[in-house]
Amino acid sequence: MAACEPARPSWYRRSLSANPQSPILHPHTERGDARAYAAWAAVCLIWGTTYLAIRISLETIPPLLMAAIRWIVAGGLLIALLGLRRERMPPPREWPALTTLGVLLLGFGNGAVVWAELTVPSGLTAVLVAMAPFWMVGIDALMPGGERLTVRRVAGLIVGFAGIVLLVWPEIQVGDGGRAFLGGVVAAQIACVGWAVGSAYARHRGRGHAKDENVLATAAFEMLLGGIVLLLAALTLGEASRLTFSTRSASALVYLIFVGAIGGFSAYAYALKHLPVATVSLYAYVNPVIAVVLGTLILRESFSARMAIAAVIVLVGSALVRAET
Image 1 (cartoon, rainbow, N blue to C red):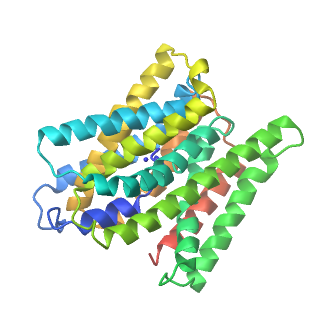
Image 2: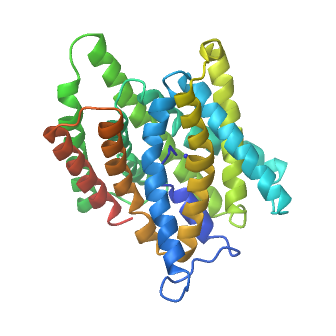
């Protein structure tokens, strides 16, 4: 999943709540409230910092190859750990579907985010990825049986789009620099579309025969299979010949694997078991703030008053869209 570290994974929430072996406990009756809120805080912090880690890893590691290494290692380690615990694994007949989900959620959803950070500052990338709910609502409205667009959601779409225009328009200049920045913006939206389509497919699948799957095992297979597809794409583009490691980039990659992927998903699963979904989903509004602050302080990325206002407008639009979901 960044991420996407992504993002805001309704597929993960719904598949977890549909699993009878993983009941969502009421927060007022669960004695482990403190641990649950600590897990939620960890999700906010971890997934907010992954944008910075991606940016640093890209200093020497090609984008698709970096994403492939991250998800193959994280997925492989999770599968090995779950195997030692003798958890139920998805049977081979489900691997094609999990590969499709891995390509959509991680190949496009995360791979395009990594690509975007080649030309877009990490903090702005996080704000652009906050557009994912807009795409999810739009795609859901087009699907058979999907929820129709309400006045509130249309208003949210308009507000969010206005924020994006305010955010990126002055940055798009004539010349190669402006085109590269615009390419990064487009890549971030491709990531949102991949995440939205993948979430819709996962929701459909989770309501059918896959509703009893082990959630972490499913996620691990998506990581591994999606990572393999990313690796094939990276090799096709010749990224292996450009692979080098520095202390900074290697450390960032290790962080993305163990903290961002394995730690983030584990904390997210724990928080969802003990807190209301509405509470856990607030991480989507915290992530961009953390990413912007870290990018500004550590990488000296520019962040003006105009960008701050635009980011707030985007998040307000996202809140309007999410209010009825």
